[in-house]
Length: 275
Image (tube, helix red, strand yellow):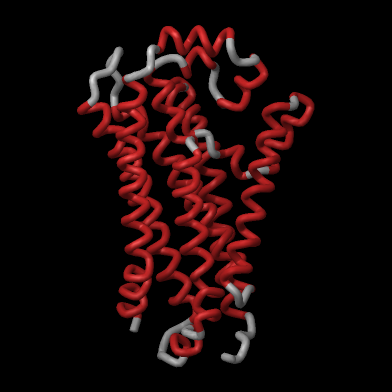
């Protein structure tokens, strides 16, 4: 039955995973192409004179770096399209782990088989994590394909973007863990998605305030997005190792803690009778 659980988890996530992987790959490739069409000299002048200096804080890196080919491509890793795809995967698969099965009425059928609750959660969590890794690799491959096929003003190595892809994976792992945690005590998937979506938006607002208001910079420790800084990991090569340990360690550690807590709750909770 364990094998059946793994196959079930793969089949349920394959369409969304492959679709998002294709989206990330194509988007990153197109982003490199669009970058090649921009006059970086004019962009640098515009960033220095046409945009208030306060907005530089939102970029996470100095505008002087954004005006370079290397830095401009790095900003793709925090583009709303990338964030939407990454969060969609984590929320969709995490919310389906428990509350999704209960809402569809399939949890009773699963538990009627000779399987433990922990096996159900582990199979879902593992496939979700592997899917997150696939998306991160597809995202980096799109960048690599663009760098290999699009003429640029200055040479840029694809290997420089690996830290950003790893940070993206760590963020997806955390979101999936939190979504699974919310799913572990709920019985309605739509409510789980709403709760996690609200949590993400609150965390995003906190990060914006922490960056824009100097006196509130301590709020960066109150949001998991404070550890999602792929553009910094890409452009600040001299600090990449220490930043990677700090950011990725935080996201992976908190995500793992969320999964463990979800397993405890799911294994001990009383499940509602099927309607």
